Length: 84
Image (cartoon, rainbow, N blue to C red; front, side, top):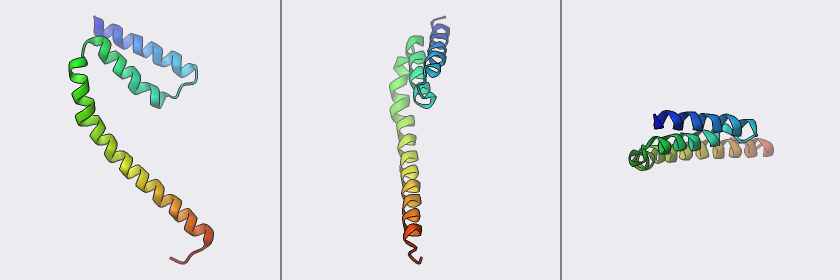
């Protein structure tokens, strides 16, 4: 029953704070953490975030930063009309 309460509370907070203008992409993981902590799943929370989430996030950020860097360099090259 406590897990359902955690889900409802985090969903309510998510809707309220999103209505107040906070970015949902930032807010959703925080509310998911809140739901898990209220539900009593804190013993599996830290290993999941450190072993799965952070590893995948690191790989994604490396790919995203490399892609954005390539896009910036290509715009820079096009603006000065360097031959490729």
